[in-house]
Length: 122
Image 1 (tube, rainbow, N blue to C red):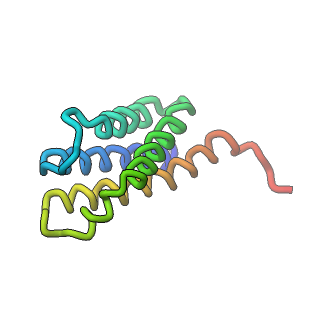
Image 2 (image 1 turned 45 degrees about the vertical axis):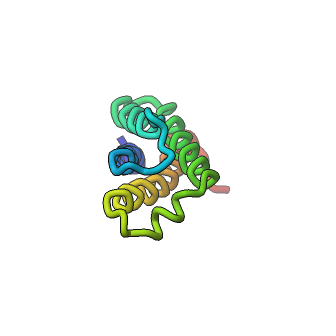
């Protein structure tokens, strides 16, 4: 298992923990059963558990991309990250968002290693 794959899986799980903290902190407008922790948690477990297959890397990258884009479109992250007065919520955001960025970078590197390692420079 490559380092980038381990980082991808770990970052997805840390982002999942951040979302769970936000949920239990009582973030306004969270759904009753938020899909984000399930998407991140399951994809992180699949990335780490299926170490030989290449498709889980793509799944993890797409999961991180989906939640990052969705969160940016929704837009409330900027208010939550700028207001450390809600400590638990703020800690959740600080776990989730940097972890998603790490997952995106590690996922891109893992995809490159898994699918394009046979290419040689000209």
